[in-house]
Length: 172
Image (cartoon, rainbow, N blue to C red; front, side, top):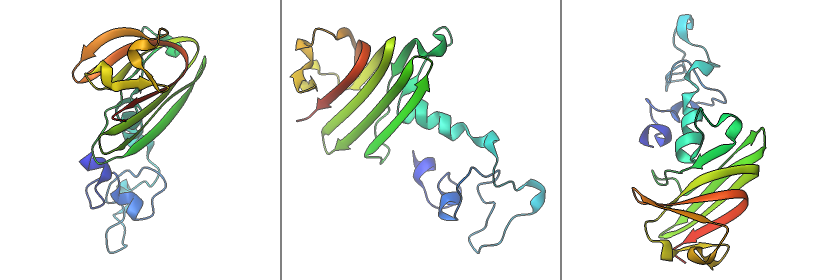
């Protein structure tokens, strides 16, 4: 997260502070004094370094799939919350419809909303290892029969969901 959010060179945010609206070939394509690097290797629209976008979807928002689940027929939603961010929202238009993940933290309180397209399933990792502390739509998670409990893993409570919209909260 530090490399993403730092405003000074070297970082992903440094070019934005210099006016960038695309991903540059060099993080320091424009120097702090406003001058430019040599034009031989200084593209200001260089998607080859676009891996940061993939990382933000897969890691920060937690939207991913596996090769054997072509077209997002099955998905994984496992956001990595923290790093100084207080909220994130991302969505993908899949073959089956919109797959989305958003989360917001305020102190110990977490709200995590997910949308799973029709005719698909998702394994969702909710940051908490205490199922009693998690609500879905204001109801205790353990009382929502549409949710299949998988278990706990590395500080997450893991559930399997069918298509629909779900709103999880913790720390109310």
